[in-house]
Amino acid sequence: ELEKVQELQRLSTIGQISAGIAHEIRNPLTAVKGFLQLMQKEHDSRYWEIVNSELEQAISTVQNLLVVSKPELNDESWSNVNMCQLLESTLSLFENEMYRVKVEKRLYNTNSIISGKRNQLKRAIFNLLKNAFEAIEGEGSITLEHYKSGDEICIHIRDSGKGIPSDKLKHLGTPFFSTKSDVGTGLGLSQVYAAFYEHKATISVKSKENKGTEFIIRMPLSQRSIEGSKPMNLHIEPNME
Ligand code: ADP
Ligand code: MG
Image 1 (cartoon, helix red, strand yellow):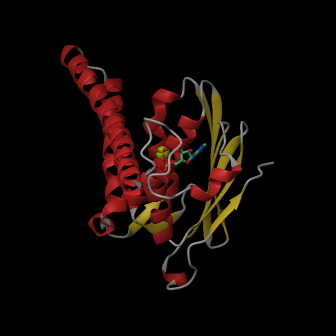
Image 2: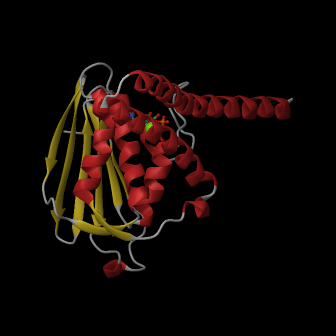
C-alpha cells in the first residue's frame, strides 16, 4: 500500500513538473508563431524584439533543465564580461512587462569587467528578473542596482511583489521547488545558485510577505585572486526593512 502511494506521488510530481515545463516552452513558442505571422504582413522592428525575447524564454527553460540534469553539458568558456551591459541587455528582454512594472535602474560602475561565463550569468540574471516580474501581480516596481565594492561587484534585484513566506525560504534553489502551481518548473533558482557558485559569488535573500523580495549577489571581479577558496555561501534573512 505504501509503495502504491509513493508511486502515485512520484507520478503526480512528474506530471506537475512536465506541465510546468510544457507551459514554459509552449507559451513563448505560441507567441513566436503569432508574431511571425504578423511579420509576414508588415515589417516592424518591435516584432523582431518580441520574437527574440520569447525565444530567449523558451531557451532559458531548456537550459535550466540541462543544468540540473546534466551540468557537464553546460560547459562554456570564461571570458571578460561587462556586467553593466549584461544587466541592460537582459533587462531589455522584459520590455513588454514595463507597462505594468516600473523598473528603476541604478547602474553605477558602467565599466566593470569581470571574468565569467557570459551566457550562464545572463541566464541567471534572466531567471532572477523573471521571478521578480512574476512575483508582482498587476502594478509594482523593480529596482536593479549594480556597483563595485572593493574587489567585488554587487548586484541587487529588488521587487515589490508578494514575497516569500519565511518557512519557504530554506527551499529556495532546491530543484523543482515551485509555488507556481502550473506555470513554474522550480528550476530557475537552481540554475541561479549553480551559476553563481561557479563564479564564487555569494547570494543573500531578504524577503517579506506582501512587501517584496531582494536578491543580493556579491561576486569577485577576478576569479584568479580567490582560486580554491570561499565555498558557496547562502544567507537568508527573512526580514526586509
Ligand atoms: P519557478 O519560478 O519556476 O517557480 P524558481 O526556481 O525560479 O522556480 O523559483 C522557486 C520559487 O521561489 C518560486 O516558485 C517562488 O515561490 C519563489 N521565488 C523566487 N523568487 C521570488 C521572488 N522574487 N518573489 C517571490 N517568490 C520568489
Ligand atoms: Mg522562476
